[in-house]
Image (cartoon, rainbow, N blue to C red; front, top):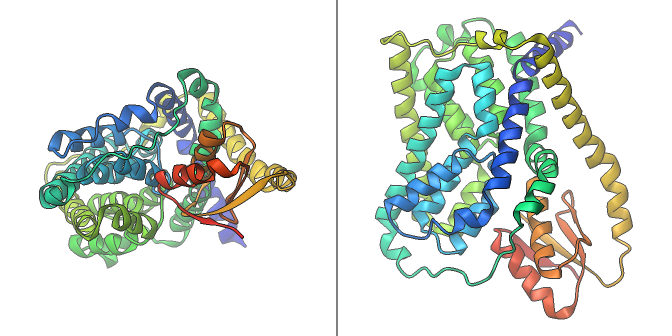
Length: 413
């Protein structure tokens, strides 16, 4: 029983360490959401050259989208005419780091590692995108921009919905993984002996390969993976191996791999996996070299003492309230809402494969609303279904709008 109490204590310690920084990250993410609509990204990424890859990478790095949340955006970019390289660069850069995950990295590990993580994300995305364009340029020459129009929210609508975006779409897209990540970090702190990796896995290459094997198939978002990496660093894992985990884990998983295969082809999948793996290991060696031979202090966590206690406490209370609010809405309020909306007349039900989080659910809902023009749309994430009123003439447009955002649609009997 004591070990459970110790895990809870360690988990609370991690939570209190980064809560205020994650709240700050959410605020920055909300500002980015208001200032930069989806149209902003789509209009710059169509050319098959290195500049489109650069723009896609720079656009993707600050966006706070997780591995599944970035999929519909990347699919939309590709279907609107973006090159394979630009689409892949966006798909790699965006989930590896964002404003929220950078703030958590800064709070738990330090600014040196945080900046190196941003630079590493830039390099991996640029490498994957440029190589993809070089190898698949002939295949991409005939790609035409999809003529189907997407609906775009106005500045006023985005500003009005910024809290909903932060609470439902952003936090909702990774809250489960965040909670699990905090508990895993607490468990590592309790069960893994100090200097475990220095004693039992002191080989740099093997430790990076282990993180690579763990990270590629695993679904873990950039923010939720950071407490785990910080806990492993405290137990003696090399900075380079931790970097490999933080680059590979958020950027690769089974869903993303299948999406790349479906939208960009076999060559793109190969480039995607090989480039992330090789570049992350190379950058891991560089980080270890800087830490060992250039005496660069990688892990520095004393900056939190700068903040007053009342502010860190306030941050913990706000984040805890946001997480609690998510679960109350998801498991209590929304169940009644779904039950009521299933009684609508002229109702149509579609099964939408590929939805994995609240961000996906909101994307599908917005797709349907863009055609129907009303908000009488409900998404049941657990059953992968969307319910809405419709007329026979717009059903095809609704399916097309959902497909354009990267999901597969099946019509229920």
